[in-house]
Image (cartoon, rainbow, N blue to C red; front, side):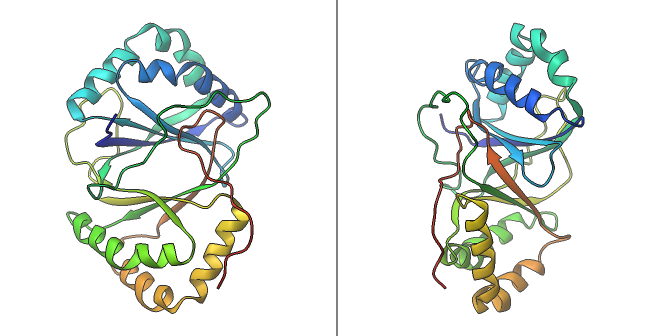
Length: 250
């Protein structure tokens, strides 16, 4: 399934409720959403907020998004489990509606989702970086990212998984609000582990290409400090970090 529209959803949860929501989500809301025409891309624990749950789902286009969401949220699975799911949440409206920044900018996902092994522990680390840029400048920022920012990140051992810009089409399913009136560029990177990510940050700090060129050029175009999320995939996430060991060369 080609996903030309992606929702990046972040939920603020009631204290101590995240594991209950993950268990419910991974058990009841993966195949059942995909059965009605969407792709559940990834579910994550936020390492920096124990009461946050982040996830991604994709759609072929905006009309099919409306159809798929209507089918799921009007269907029996959501009716059965919605009170339990909603009971874990304080709010669920922090949602970015996105499209790939480049023709090949979306996620390259495996065709099938492996069944989780009993007591499987989360592995891998996915970093989501959200850049807030001036209205209607996302294409300019995407060009900067491809030309200057991405090569420096990759040289410092980042694996860029996907990059997106704001999808400007009207929300085709108003029952689920999205953050409208914002212009963002979002990229996702795989580092395998938190130590590998720390090595990456250290490599960037040593890189003149980053500190003197890429970072200043990026900072001139953003309206506020980038949001950086350290995300660990759940056992049933299709998008998973690739565990890596060893130190990066300088």
